[in-house]
Image (cartoon, rainbow, N blue to C red; front, side, top):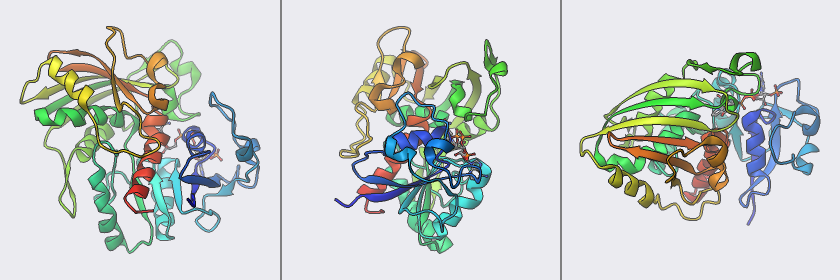
Length: 342
Ligand code: NAP
């Protein structure tokens, strides 16, 4: 099979590095372009990027020359965007206009009415918005997005609970420092500390969740009717966002019924290479899930849940730069391919 040419925008950053790790040797995609800022463009990737992942930088990637974030300089069919928000707002449409498929991590376009915000296990039908977007904007390409790293873990766990008629969700997050990017949180601020504020995070969790669990009526998304109330905190963990969730549901399921709904969850997406098994892992131990112990389950794509109590209250946890970022976009791209959109 001819592989699809893939570029990474923001290739030197935290999420960009995860993209490279996940796309290197991917059965369907071939890394053909790595793009970053002017300070990196023209250098070999191995010199431009300060590699921060556990696994070594792939050797052939280190030899690739970084290009600027410019549709004329990027050789790819699909670009995976890990650009800072402000830049994403202007550059992602430029790439779509130029005919690229853009799978974005950035928040810039997520809540636009004609931009699909997708988790394959939750709302694959929302990809139908691509046709609406291309009709309205007259783009040859298109932009699809994945949610914020905190939203995604919770939304995956809410999908199997939707049948109990969700009325209200409360969430308190404990978010890893890698979620803020390499230069995001100074060591002096986070060491021995909890920071009870993450700019715009609560708003993102509250709005994106409703779009994700909303209904696509053929032309637009009707938000899910329940309310979400979020309180987001930065904690001294490297990778892995932990979330305490209170889910009020009209059908008032027991903890056993909720646990069974998690265990039975099968989104039926067979054949996507990055799809984890299981999508949701139920931890039986009373002190799990924990980021250090559980963030790499399913290659970092599984969301772990535990401590399911009456109320319903439970904890969920997932790897923020894999399931919450690069892995989410790669899974979306695999879904695009499966649906004939690539
Ligand atoms: P990061 O580590 O700061 O990386 C930023 C990347 O963007 C670098 O490759 C950088 O290139 C490039 N860049 C910065 N300014 C640029 C410019 N003016 N022109 C061209 N390229 C530029 O950030 P990150 O954590 O990877 O986050 C990237 C995006 O993903 C953000 O929108 C973020 O909100 C989103 N996101 C992050 C996470 C997470 O867990 N970290 C989760 C979900 C979504 P240089 O190295 O050349 O400067």
